[in-house]
Amino acid sequence: MYLMLPLLLVTAGAAAQEAVAPDPLGTRFIDMPTPFTVGSRRIELLFTHRFQQTVQDGDDHNLWGLDGGSDVGIGLTWGATPRLDLSLFRSSFQENFELSAKYRVFDQGERMPVSLGVRAGANLLRREGIEDADRPFVQLLLARRITPGVSVVLAPSWVQDTPRLRNAFNVPAGITFPFRKSLIEIEWIPANRDLDESEDAWHVAISREIGDHIFEVLIGNSRATTVDQYLGGDFAGGFESGDVRFGFNLIRDFGL
Amino acid sequence: MRSRPVLERAAGLLVLLLAAACGSVKTPTEPPEEPGGAAPFTFTRIQAEIFTPNCAKAGCHDAASASAGMVLTAGRAYGEIVGRPATERSSMNRIEPGDPARSYLVKKLRGDADITGDRMPLDQPGGLPQAQIDGLIAWVRAGAPND
Image 1 (cartoon, rainbow over the protein chains, first blue to last red):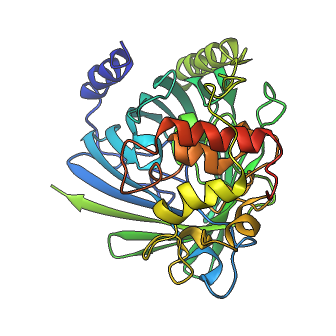
Image 2: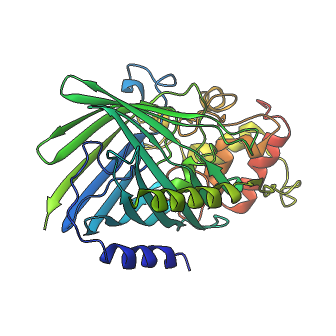
């Protein structure tokens, strides 16, 4: 059932084969997606790394958390058409597989104030003992480029289950600023209004494209990288607003 | 001029998302009140029967290795776990006196679904004998005394 919407998107995408230009924002912000796609006949490889120990709990003996464990994510995205991406991402945290399809509906232009995309899929958690382990989600992806290097991204999103919520809705937001040859990215996922214990999640990254690679070095409070884990502000691994952790994303594009 | 219908469709989808926005908090699964009838453990017994033979080993939680920044050798273990934040989850203490559900070490020994990394001890995939886990839970529930 969860694959029905992606299949519909595949059908819709097959009808739209015109070339679209890649956007400097890329297909992914820090954890939230952007409306943009990889491009036809291209694949994108993603590695995420989130250190578990907080900087404040560490010291110079463990390099403020860098000696400790981490949650690792590996993802692959295939550009099925210029406007349609099919993705598989797997996070080591609770063996979380995120299957998704993203359709780039339209781009910002003279008559269009924003770029818009739709993403649908499901998180499938394979660690034993987890309740509600299959968690479908839908995201509406909006981006507006204000000036070169300055963009705003919003992602009104619904997921059937988070660790503590049923039918969770939230609006992750992001903004970028140019910094020399890099981008500063700020991402904020508000505390969920339906859960008193929910926490705001924040990340700040410096992102730089070198060759076909994008390197993002980041700090933030939460380790969540999948929709079901970041939407409720109730990441099952726990976090607090004042936590500071290191992490990085590495993205590599390939032409087929 | 096709922008308006597309925008209308996008607005419709947003309305659908908002309609689905009535989130509700799930009922948490509470741990059992009584830990299976196991006899209460003292901390001395926990150290002797659980930490020293299973945890305070080279490459694990002896003083030289201190995995996750935690030493579980006799004489050090109590100060390292009771009221000290868990490395893998700083919002929880390793042992929260009186509250097994908020004690991350208990979750690691039980292999709860929400732990980071593997169930402990690593070399016992099935975990400690249930009687030992129950005994440690009873000790935490009793206030985790240094007895």
